[in-house]
Figure 1 (cartoon, helix red, strand yellow):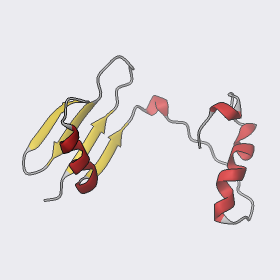
Figure 2: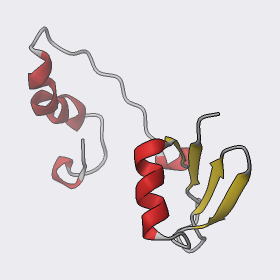
Figure 3: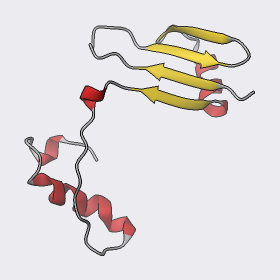
Figure 4: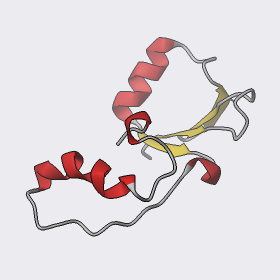
Length: 93
């Protein structure tokens, strides 16, 4: 059985981040109450699933011009700028 490391981010910033590791047995705990050595091993060997609150997610659709794939990160901020309510320089893509 392959191992799966699941990390659950809370909606409230003051709540702890929980983790669960699914193997033959299930281990769980609060982040960062796990040894760095274990974490480093898990990050290299396990499938990782992140669970984040839906309130953290925005989905936007734009029509991309016919450009090379490597140019998309350069032009995407300009395409989204009109749709967003924040200064484009404060966002990460």
